[in-house]
Image (cartoon, rainbow, N blue to C red):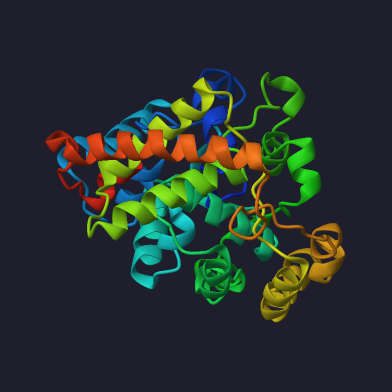
Length: 353
């Protein structure tokens, strides 16, 4: 019997992964009718993090062990021609040799032929989005400039290791550029086309989730986290998560929630892009037979005007609203810090659900 294809969507972060995962979760039945088996993720947002971690050989807590067991059982019961797994954690895990070896061995033991689906993004825009998300999640408090320069050195921003991974395990790498045009047209239709599905056969392909928050949200979260750190305390995972949702609720209630944060200047973006150029060109020439700049032309030429309140002071009325929002959020953060139920440390693998 021919092996079934397993489309493994590996991210990276901040390339529409939440939208893809939510779509897969909400359309499991419809996708199955078209020959695509999507495992039950056991996560509210649809990401297959526990399954991905288990397939890589990581130990999980007891209540997440069933993800792999159920996957095998459901797979054996399904007559679908293809399987779809989505977890941006794999972009990190599969860069580790031992995890990669275990992952591909286990897939092939299940008679699955893996194909990696990957959406590279121009690094300066990626760093900007990752910073806003980190601040919103109450895990980053440093200024954008220092974060960006530090993160630009991260090996996780290099895409050529995906080529080496595909060569080592003889798997197809399906790479599609995540550009401003992709954002405008929607990532879900592009993903469906990448796995050979017709977007016209499905509803709700235009949905967008987890959009980048705006400068007001970033400023409140960053100021509150700096205040907490200044008291020699530090948020545990559950506390930070509660703060994130509390802040979103407060801003929604007062009509202050915003989107579109930018900490980049054009000069800084050009520096980041220049540092990544060689690796980017290696990747682009291999997968598209064209230079990176030709694929990401509009993104690499984009001019940036930062709206970060630490860089550009807001007007009087915005400053007044900001002070009120910070006061409210500090009071909420203090209550969260005082709640013993939220002070319990959570194991790393329990942070994905």
